[in-house]
Image (cartoon, rainbow, N blue to C red):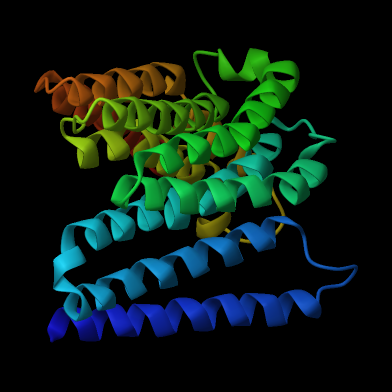
Length: 284
């Protein structure tokens, strides 16, 4: 009962959030930014994932399939859609260089991303061939985004410092997770340490990159000053090394190697140390 009640609560909250975003978007000056639709789609995926949990108690014979549906709608749908939408607008911000194609990509690539999510979730649950079609559809926004970043931000991405490397690492990690999951499913195998691999390859690089960029704004809102720039510079030190460690840690975890945890924790410790240094160096 508690699980069903929690799932119902999340379903209502996610649906209400999607409706609220759409309502607020209609009042935006000049129309809402196309990234908003990615967040709405992510919220609806979360609602659908919660619906799958409710369905488990109604159709226990399909429990395993519905659990897989729930997991994929959460990871690829809720987290993936929100994250890829955010990456599209965050990279130009941290690189301080505009991406003239971001609006068109966000508008055109949402449909294949949503359909790809649904097909991957359904394929993982019932018919694996659907997951292959879903992977091909998801590769459209990933490849288009990766090509744009390669053209515009290659020097920032392959830098030893800065905020771009972990964001690029998150995109690469997401692509690897999709491809590896599809390959292993095709051969009837299960990814070793799948949850940890998702965290190391995608979630942690994304969150650390975003945190380094957004923490100064949260700590000191308003006009951007030299302090904000100094904070980001300090927090972004050795980010290239951290991005590599996250990728290696995630790949090691996928191979069932315990070293993956060590590499990921090492990268996190480096990030926390740089943020602490940025905070200590803060001048009020």
